[in-house]
Length: 265
Image 1 (cartoon, rainbow, N blue to C red):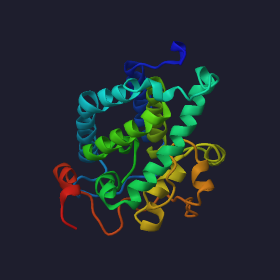
Image 2 (tube, rainbow, N blue to C red; image 1 turned 60 degrees about the vertical axis):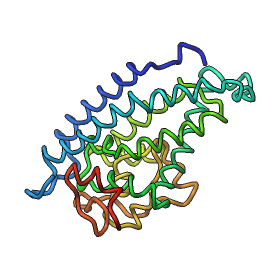
Image 3 (cartoon, rainbow, N blue to C red; image 1 turned 180 degrees about the vertical axis):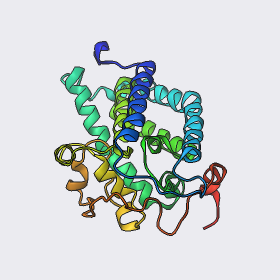
């Protein structure tokens, strides 16, 4: 890939960090839904943000120690396996095709996290959040992050994907996730127009609806077309009072979230 198209881990962190800060402020100035008034831990306020932040900090450490080295190894260990890629699959066209392919694959990985019991045990931590804002986009159990890294490495090798494509896609995914988890109120006409192309809060909040039929829908991450193509789009409209979480389950403390995948069901 042309070096001019490359994105460094530092560039990724700066882009995502700036977008995250912007959305955290914007969604509090123009909220789409008002957090419920409750003192129950962790609630919608600072204690909830601390739980989400604690999970995120653990995953930052995991990414530096394991995820990034594993991704680099997968991208460089078997370069000959990418020899099948034609010459035109490089530069900007190649990057765009890689991003489209990765978005398609992450749709199926997300769907698998809802269907495969072992994967759901870890992914459920993300869905236990009972209110959504930008911080929900980085709320994942470290086990899910590790499993995702392994799945990505397995995919990268036979497809001959380069590290630059992976970093660009991870940046795009984080920017998209922060946006569609956010509590930002958009003009209805703008949100409707955007939803034909990308996943918006009105789409993804339904995915977090505390009704299992809706939780098991709307799996797309960046482009919204995958749910339309594979018949997984929910017809439920988002409402400001829509209950968020896992049907029949309640939120946990940070320590409870860490232990959740390992509890007997």
